[in-house]
Length: 385
Image (cartoon, rainbow, N blue to C red; front, side, top):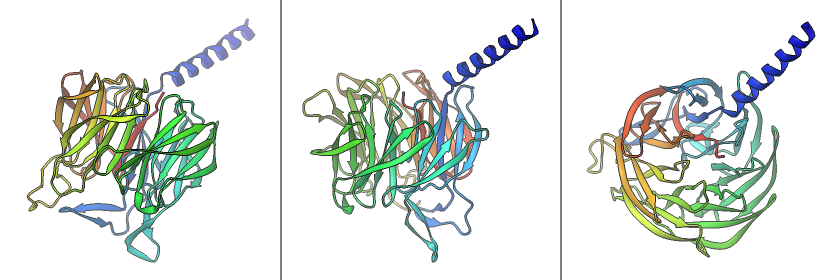
């Protein structure tokens, strides 16, 4: 009888562990402590604390911090420098810049990508990999087998294979020269294609993927001025691109790329305001969240200054974009992430060093809390399944 009870107990423990893993809902932020904003000017902090990564539990309401890990990150680049495997076992975090060892008042290009074991207790960095010059946006395919890292300082994309907890460099794809500013690479759901933004020369490049073989197709798409962040809907029908412009007070744009068309092409562009830094498609593909700086990163005496950023929600229907909601956010705000059910949104605020939490019912946004993090949250991401 005791043996039977012991077996039953072991089975029950295993079932509960599997159930817990199956229902895990994590968000991960990369937090930069090296820089600060002083009345519109980015400055290097003196004797800064280490950069951090914060792991947030989205299952509870309000969301709460589960753990913090020291790992290098950077505000330089789109707010997509962290990615999770679909099973939420690993996070990859890129660092595009670091403090110059010979001159603490300067930033220089970095090459590090940290691999964090999210299942460890506590989570821990298990490997530090080398990508190209200034690794920026990172994505992992929905199969959990491949990662792409856009190297903004050299016009390339690094390719890494993923097997369990082992992440291995398997190649690098040259797209253009270093002035092209390759910013972010994002997979289509089937993992056979990726799109890469090039803010330096205003293009979006198409990659073809077969296993670990990644090729530049020589096909480029033209969306808007300085395409930066990009995301693809879970059904693979479209990509949404944030075109950040040149930061001179003009209203900037978001574009839709129709991925069903042959070849894929831009079919819609709408104005959202000054500097759409972050962009994220909702899990059901019905909405696009856009983090707009709105002049909150400019000097107070600037004619383009705004004393708050804004979170804009756009509805996607018939390949058209329509604004459905807007809410004020913090200053110098970066990325956005949806909870798996699409009802909760996270926004990272650099100046406030917090993550703003919103509820969204499809019609309106409501702020429901803030999560303090140790550093400026330069990127936030959830797993793409």
